[in-house]
Length: 88
Image (tube, rainbow, N blue to C red; front, top):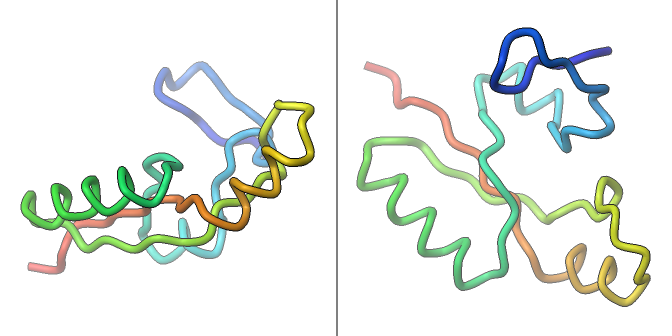
């Protein structure tokens, strides 16, 4: 399966996007992955902008870094931020 990212002509395999298809089907948009402090700051900002916000444990599967220790820290501590518009 391919997903459009930004430019409608650019398509990437789902495995490279980090998108959770179950969340996407519920209207959630993946924003980014961040350390815990930055994730909290971003979540508060998105709430102030009127979005519903959720944070999921980060998946290191799509990371390109070869360091196993780095992947372990990302998977254990970092969060992936998802938003969606609040229902009217």
